[in-house]
Length: 362
Ligand code: MG
Image 1 (tube, rainbow, N blue to C red):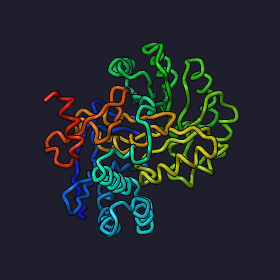
Image 2: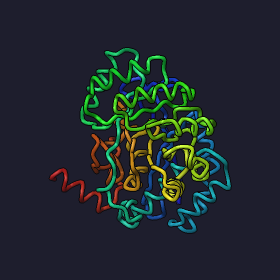
Image 3: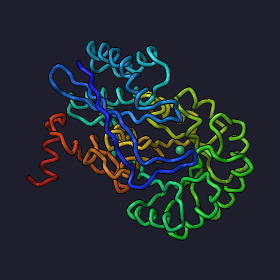
Image 4: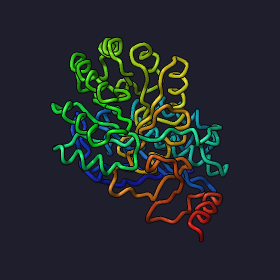
Protein backbone atom coordinates (compact mmCIF):
# COMPACT_ATOMS: atom_id res chain seq x y z
CA UNK A 1 0.00 0.00 0.00
CA UNK A 2 1.51 3.29 -1.09
CA UNK A 3 0.16 6.84 -1.05
CA UNK A 4 1.31 9.50 -3.50
CA UNK A 5 0.11 12.99 -4.33
CA UNK A 6 0.36 15.64 -7.01
CA UNK A 7 -0.90 19.21 -7.30
CA UNK A 8 -3.13 20.47 -10.11
CA UNK A 9 -3.69 24.16 -10.75
CA UNK A 10 -7.14 24.82 -12.16
CA UNK A 11 -8.91 27.99 -13.23
CA UNK A 12 -12.54 29.04 -13.08
CA UNK A 13 -14.09 30.27 -16.33
CA UNK A 14 -14.84 33.57 -14.57
CA UNK A 15 -13.41 35.00 -11.33
CA UNK A 16 -15.39 33.23 -8.59
CA UNK A 17 -16.46 35.95 -6.16
CA UNK A 18 -18.39 35.45 -2.91
CA UNK A 19 -18.96 37.76 0.08
CA UNK A 20 -15.43 37.02 1.45
CA UNK A 21 -13.61 37.77 -1.82
CA UNK A 22 -12.74 35.95 -5.01
CA UNK A 23 -10.12 34.17 -7.10
CA UNK A 24 -9.64 32.59 -10.52
CA UNK A 25 -6.86 30.11 -9.76
CA UNK A 26 -7.09 27.14 -7.38
CA UNK A 27 -4.58 24.46 -6.41
CA UNK A 28 -5.99 20.99 -5.81
CA UNK A 29 -4.10 18.04 -4.38
CA UNK A 30 -4.77 14.62 -5.87
CA UNK A 31 -4.13 11.66 -3.58
CA UNK A 32 -3.55 8.17 -4.99
CA UNK A 33 -3.55 5.03 -2.89
CA UNK A 34 -1.96 2.11 -4.75
CA UNK A 35 -2.30 -1.40 -3.40
CA UNK A 36 0.05 -4.37 -3.88
CA UNK A 37 -1.90 -5.48 -7.00
CA UNK A 38 -1.45 -2.05 -8.59
CA UNK A 39 -5.10 -1.07 -8.14
CA UNK A 40 -5.42 2.67 -7.49
CA UNK A 41 -7.93 4.66 -5.46
CA UNK A 42 -8.10 8.40 -6.08
CA UNK A 43 -9.24 11.34 -3.99
CA UNK A 44 -8.82 15.11 -4.11
CA UNK A 45 -8.20 17.78 -1.50
CA UNK A 46 -9.61 21.27 -2.13
CA UNK A 47 -8.10 23.23 0.79
CA UNK A 48 -9.96 26.39 1.75
CA UNK A 49 -8.52 29.32 3.71
CA UNK A 50 -11.77 29.95 5.57
CA UNK A 51 -11.25 26.59 7.28
CA UNK A 52 -7.57 27.34 7.95
CA UNK A 53 -6.13 25.32 5.08
CA UNK A 54 -3.82 26.03 2.15
CA UNK A 55 -2.27 23.76 -0.45
CA UNK A 56 0.94 23.70 1.60
CA UNK A 57 -0.86 22.87 4.84
CA UNK A 58 -2.79 20.08 3.10
CA UNK A 59 0.46 18.57 1.80
CA UNK A 60 2.03 18.93 5.26
CA UNK A 61 -1.02 17.14 6.71
CA UNK A 62 -0.50 14.31 4.22
CA UNK A 63 3.01 13.81 5.62
CA UNK A 64 1.39 12.98 8.97
CA UNK A 65 -1.77 11.29 7.73
CA UNK A 66 -0.16 9.26 4.91
CA UNK A 67 1.73 6.88 7.24
CA UNK A 68 -1.43 6.47 9.36
CA UNK A 69 -3.46 5.54 6.27
CA UNK A 70 -0.74 3.19 4.99
CA UNK A 71 -0.65 1.41 8.34
CA UNK A 72 -4.43 1.03 8.65
CA UNK A 73 -5.06 0.06 5.03
CA UNK A 74 -2.06 -2.29 4.78
CA UNK A 75 -3.60 -4.22 7.66
CA UNK A 76 -7.09 -4.13 6.13
CA UNK A 77 -7.88 -2.22 2.93
CA UNK A 78 -11.59 -2.31 3.86
CA UNK A 79 -11.08 -0.60 7.25
CA UNK A 80 -12.74 2.65 6.13
CA UNK A 81 -14.19 3.49 9.54
CA UNK A 82 -10.91 2.86 11.36
CA UNK A 83 -9.09 4.94 8.76
CA UNK A 84 -11.08 8.09 9.59
CA UNK A 85 -10.95 7.43 13.34
CA UNK A 86 -7.17 6.98 13.29
CA UNK A 87 -6.63 10.06 11.11
CA UNK A 88 -8.69 12.16 13.54
CA UNK A 89 -6.65 10.80 16.45
CA UNK A 90 -3.37 11.61 14.69
CA UNK A 91 -4.24 15.16 13.60
CA UNK A 92 -6.97 17.70 14.33
CA UNK A 93 -8.77 19.66 11.59
CA UNK A 94 -7.28 19.45 8.04
CA UNK A 95 -10.60 18.23 6.65
CA UNK A 96 -9.68 18.56 2.99
CA UNK A 97 -6.71 16.18 3.14
CA UNK A 98 -8.51 13.72 5.42
CA UNK A 99 -11.41 13.64 2.97
CA UNK A 100 -9.05 13.13 0.01
CA UNK A 101 -7.52 10.09 1.74
CA UNK A 102 -10.95 8.78 2.78
CA UNK A 103 -12.26 9.22 -0.78
CA UNK A 104 -9.23 7.45 -2.25
CA UNK A 105 -9.66 4.54 0.19
CA UNK A 106 -13.37 4.26 -0.71
CA UNK A 107 -12.52 4.42 -4.43
CA UNK A 108 -9.97 1.63 -3.93
CA UNK A 109 -12.51 -0.59 -2.14
CA UNK A 110 -15.03 0.04 -4.93
CA UNK A 111 -12.48 -0.91 -7.58
CA UNK A 112 -11.40 -4.04 -5.71
CA UNK A 113 -15.05 -5.12 -5.51
CA UNK A 114 -15.72 -3.86 -9.04
CA UNK A 115 -18.70 -1.77 -7.91
CA UNK A 116 -19.20 1.97 -7.45
CA UNK A 117 -19.08 3.18 -3.85
CA UNK A 118 -22.78 4.14 -3.84
CA UNK A 119 -23.63 0.49 -4.58
CA UNK A 120 -21.51 -0.52 -1.62
CA UNK A 121 -23.86 1.66 0.45
CA UNK A 122 -26.99 0.27 -1.23
CA UNK A 123 -27.97 3.59 -2.81
CA UNK A 124 -30.00 4.21 -5.96
CA UNK A 125 -28.29 6.81 -8.19
CA UNK A 126 -31.70 7.63 -9.71
CA UNK A 127 -32.61 9.26 -6.40
CA UNK A 128 -29.79 11.83 -6.59
CA UNK A 129 -31.21 15.38 -6.74
CA UNK A 130 -30.21 17.66 -9.61
CA UNK A 131 -27.29 19.90 -8.82
CA UNK A 132 -27.65 23.66 -8.66
CA UNK A 133 -25.24 25.91 -10.54
CA UNK A 134 -23.68 28.83 -8.69
CA UNK A 135 -23.68 32.42 -9.89
CA UNK A 136 -20.89 34.30 -8.08
CA UNK A 137 -21.17 38.00 -7.22
CA UNK A 138 -20.83 39.87 -10.54
CA UNK A 139 -19.23 43.26 -11.23
CA UNK A 140 -22.06 44.47 -13.46
CA UNK A 141 -25.60 43.53 -14.42
CA UNK A 142 -24.38 42.73 -17.95
CA UNK A 143 -21.92 40.19 -16.49
CA UNK A 144 -24.68 38.74 -14.30
CA UNK A 145 -27.04 38.22 -17.24
CA UNK A 146 -24.21 36.60 -19.20
CA UNK A 147 -23.57 34.13 -16.35
CA UNK A 148 -27.27 33.27 -16.09
CA UNK A 149 -27.37 32.69 -19.87
CA UNK A 150 -24.32 30.41 -19.63
CA UNK A 151 -26.15 28.34 -17.00
CA UNK A 152 -28.97 27.63 -19.45
CA UNK A 153 -28.88 23.86 -18.94
CA UNK A 154 -29.19 24.11 -15.15
CA UNK A 155 -32.75 24.34 -13.84
CA UNK A 156 -31.58 25.35 -10.34
CA UNK A 157 -29.38 28.40 -9.68
CA UNK A 158 -27.61 29.27 -6.43
CA UNK A 159 -27.05 33.01 -6.18
CA UNK A 160 -24.18 34.32 -4.09
CA UNK A 161 -25.12 37.45 -2.14
CA UNK A 162 -23.49 39.45 0.62
CA UNK A 163 -22.58 42.59 -1.32
CA UNK A 164 -24.05 46.10 -1.20
CA UNK A 165 -25.93 45.30 -4.45
CA UNK A 166 -27.88 42.26 -3.24
CA UNK A 167 -31.33 43.69 -4.04
CA UNK A 168 -30.22 44.64 -7.55
CA UNK A 169 -28.64 41.21 -8.12
CA UNK A 170 -31.66 39.16 -7.08
CA UNK A 171 -34.03 41.28 -9.18
CA UNK A 172 -31.75 40.98 -12.22
CA UNK A 173 -31.40 37.20 -11.84
CA UNK A 174 -35.15 36.74 -11.58
CA UNK A 175 -35.66 38.88 -14.72
CA UNK A 176 -33.06 36.80 -16.59
CA UNK A 177 -34.37 33.44 -15.27
CA UNK A 178 -38.10 33.86 -14.66
CA UNK A 179 -38.92 30.17 -14.16
CA UNK A 180 -35.81 28.64 -12.56
CA UNK A 181 -35.56 27.47 -8.97
CA UNK A 182 -33.40 30.04 -7.14
CA UNK A 183 -31.47 29.54 -3.92
CA UNK A 184 -29.39 32.15 -2.11
CA UNK A 185 -26.11 31.91 -0.21
CA UNK A 186 -25.03 34.96 1.81
CA UNK A 187 -21.79 33.30 3.01
CA UNK A 188 -22.17 34.70 6.55
CA UNK A 189 -22.25 38.32 5.36
CA UNK A 190 -25.52 39.65 6.77
CA UNK A 191 -26.68 40.93 10.14
CA UNK A 192 -29.97 39.57 11.49
CA UNK A 193 -31.74 42.82 10.56
CA UNK A 194 -30.34 42.78 7.03
CA UNK A 195 -31.17 39.08 6.66
CA UNK A 196 -34.83 39.58 7.57
CA UNK A 197 -35.15 42.54 5.21
CA UNK A 198 -33.49 40.54 2.41
CA UNK A 199 -35.65 37.47 3.09
CA UNK A 200 -38.81 39.55 2.47
CA UNK A 201 -37.40 40.46 -0.94
CA UNK A 202 -36.28 36.88 -1.65
CA UNK A 203 -39.80 35.61 -0.90
CA UNK A 204 -41.19 38.08 -3.44
CA UNK A 205 -38.78 36.67 -6.02
CA UNK A 206 -39.65 33.04 -5.31
CA UNK A 207 -36.35 31.99 -3.70
CA UNK A 208 -36.44 28.48 -2.22
CA UNK A 209 -34.08 28.81 0.79
CA UNK A 210 -31.23 30.85 2.25
CA UNK A 211 -27.82 29.46 3.11
CA UNK A 212 -25.76 30.87 5.99
CA UNK A 213 -27.19 34.38 6.35
CA UNK A 214 -25.15 35.19 9.51
CA UNK A 215 -21.58 34.59 10.77
CA UNK A 216 -20.74 30.96 11.56
CA UNK A 217 -20.54 31.39 15.36
CA UNK A 218 -23.80 33.35 15.69
CA UNK A 219 -26.17 30.48 16.49
CA UNK A 220 -28.52 32.65 18.56
CA UNK A 221 -28.72 35.10 15.65
CA UNK A 222 -29.51 32.23 13.28
CA UNK A 223 -32.26 31.03 15.64
CA UNK A 224 -33.66 34.59 15.80
CA UNK A 225 -33.73 34.84 12.00
CA UNK A 226 -35.18 31.38 11.51
CA UNK A 227 -38.04 32.07 13.92
CA UNK A 228 -38.99 35.14 11.88
CA UNK A 229 -38.15 33.86 8.39
CA UNK A 230 -40.68 32.46 5.97
CA UNK A 231 -37.83 30.78 4.06
CA UNK A 232 -35.88 27.75 5.34
CA UNK A 233 -32.40 28.56 6.66
CA UNK A 234 -29.51 26.18 5.87
CA UNK A 235 -26.23 26.22 7.84
CA UNK A 236 -22.98 25.86 5.90
CA UNK A 237 -20.08 27.66 7.61
CA UNK A 238 -21.74 26.89 11.00
CA UNK A 239 -21.74 23.15 10.32
CA UNK A 240 -18.40 21.41 9.82
CA UNK A 241 -18.67 17.92 11.35
CA UNK A 242 -21.39 15.62 12.75
CA UNK A 243 -21.08 16.95 16.31
CA UNK A 244 -22.13 20.40 15.01
CA UNK A 245 -25.44 19.05 13.70
CA UNK A 246 -27.12 18.52 17.09
CA UNK A 247 -26.17 22.07 18.15
CA UNK A 248 -27.99 23.38 15.07
CA UNK A 249 -31.27 21.53 15.65
CA UNK A 250 -33.93 24.19 16.25
CA UNK A 251 -31.44 26.87 15.19
CA UNK A 252 -31.69 26.26 11.41
CA UNK A 253 -33.78 24.07 9.14
CA UNK A 254 -30.98 22.15 7.51
CA UNK A 255 -27.26 21.65 6.96
CA UNK A 256 -24.85 21.85 4.02
CA UNK A 257 -22.22 19.08 4.09
CA UNK A 258 -18.90 19.42 2.27
CA UNK A 259 -16.22 16.74 2.22
CA UNK A 260 -13.47 19.34 2.47
CA UNK A 261 -14.98 20.53 5.77
CA UNK A 262 -15.97 17.26 7.42
CA UNK A 263 -12.90 15.15 6.60
CA UNK A 264 -14.29 11.99 5.05
CA UNK A 265 -17.09 10.01 3.51
CA UNK A 266 -17.89 8.17 6.77
CA UNK A 267 -18.21 11.51 8.56
CA UNK A 268 -20.48 12.79 5.79
CA UNK A 269 -22.74 9.74 6.25
CA UNK A 270 -22.75 10.38 10.01
CA UNK A 271 -23.80 14.01 9.41
CA UNK A 272 -26.63 12.85 7.15
CA UNK A 273 -27.86 10.30 9.72
CA UNK A 274 -27.67 12.84 12.56
CA UNK A 275 -29.55 15.49 10.59
CA UNK A 276 -32.22 12.98 9.56
CA UNK A 277 -32.69 11.86 13.17
CA UNK A 278 -33.26 15.51 14.09
CA UNK A 279 -35.73 16.08 11.24
CA UNK A 280 -33.45 18.47 9.37
CA UNK A 281 -33.01 19.11 5.65
CA UNK A 282 -29.78 17.74 4.17
CA UNK A 283 -27.83 19.46 1.44
CA UNK A 284 -24.28 18.86 0.24
CA UNK A 285 -22.00 21.20 -1.61
CA UNK A 286 -18.40 21.57 -2.68
CA UNK A 287 -15.50 23.96 -2.98
CA UNK A 288 -13.96 24.77 -6.36
CA UNK A 289 -13.00 21.17 -7.17
CA UNK A 290 -12.37 19.05 -10.24
CA UNK A 291 -14.65 16.21 -11.29
CA UNK A 292 -12.51 13.95 -9.14
CA UNK A 293 -13.45 15.76 -5.92
CA UNK A 294 -17.08 16.17 -6.96
CA UNK A 295 -17.48 12.49 -7.82
CA UNK A 296 -16.38 11.43 -4.31
CA UNK A 297 -19.29 13.39 -2.83
CA UNK A 298 -21.70 12.34 -5.59
CA UNK A 299 -21.69 8.81 -4.17
CA UNK A 300 -23.86 9.89 -1.22
CA UNK A 301 -26.04 12.27 -3.26
CA UNK A 302 -29.02 9.83 -3.32
CA UNK A 303 -29.32 10.56 0.43
CA UNK A 304 -29.65 14.34 -0.08
CA UNK A 305 -32.55 16.75 -0.42
CA UNK A 306 -30.43 19.26 -2.33
CA UNK A 307 -27.09 19.03 -4.15
CA UNK A 308 -24.73 21.84 -5.06
CA UNK A 309 -22.05 19.91 -6.93
CA UNK A 310 -21.05 22.47 -9.54
CA UNK A 311 -17.39 23.03 -8.57
CA UNK A 312 -16.05 21.26 -11.66
CA UNK A 313 -18.66 22.81 -13.97
CA UNK A 314 -17.30 26.25 -13.02
CA UNK A 315 -13.80 25.27 -14.24
CA UNK A 316 -12.25 26.19 -17.58
CA UNK A 317 -9.70 23.38 -17.28
CA UNK A 318 -11.11 20.43 -15.33
CA UNK A 319 -8.27 17.86 -15.56
CA UNK A 320 -10.80 15.03 -15.89
CA UNK A 321 -13.22 14.34 -18.69
CA UNK A 322 -15.90 13.55 -16.12
CA UNK A 323 -16.11 11.69 -12.86
CA UNK A 324 -14.85 8.49 -11.30
CA UNK A 325 -18.36 7.73 -10.13
CA UNK A 326 -21.51 6.64 -11.89
CA UNK A 327 -23.48 9.56 -10.57
CA UNK A 328 -21.38 12.61 -11.20
CA UNK A 329 -23.64 15.56 -11.86
CA UNK A 330 -23.04 17.54 -15.02
CA UNK A 331 -25.53 19.70 -16.83
CA UNK A 332 -27.89 19.14 -13.92
CA UNK A 333 -28.21 15.47 -14.75
CA UNK A 334 -26.34 12.43 -13.50
CA UNK A 335 -23.87 11.11 -16.03
CA UNK A 336 -21.03 8.71 -15.89
CA UNK A 337 -17.55 8.50 -17.34
CA UNK A 338 -14.12 8.76 -15.89
CA UNK A 339 -10.54 9.41 -16.67
CA UNK A 340 -7.78 11.90 -16.51
CA UNK A 341 -7.49 13.76 -19.79
CA UNK A 342 -3.79 13.03 -20.05
CA UNK A 343 -3.49 9.64 -18.43
CA UNK A 344 -4.39 6.11 -19.33
CA UNK A 345 -7.41 4.43 -17.81
CA UNK A 346 -5.20 2.11 -15.81
CA UNK A 347 -6.91 2.89 -12.55
CA UNK A 348 -10.33 2.02 -13.91
CA UNK A 349 -11.78 -1.36 -13.25
CA UNK A 350 -12.39 -3.72 -16.15
CA UNK A 351 -16.12 -3.22 -15.67
CA UNK A 352 -15.73 0.54 -16.01
CA UNK A 353 -13.57 0.13 -19.12
CA UNK A 354 -16.18 -2.11 -20.72
CA UNK A 355 -18.93 0.38 -19.94
CA UNK A 356 -16.86 3.22 -21.37
CA UNK A 357 -16.23 1.26 -24.56
CA UNK A 358 -19.95 0.55 -24.95
CA UNK A 359 -20.81 4.21 -24.52
CA UNK A 360 -18.15 5.33 -26.96
CA UNK A 361 -19.31 2.69 -29.43
CA UNK A 362 -15.85 1.25 -30.03
MG1 MG B 1 -22.38 28.04 1.26
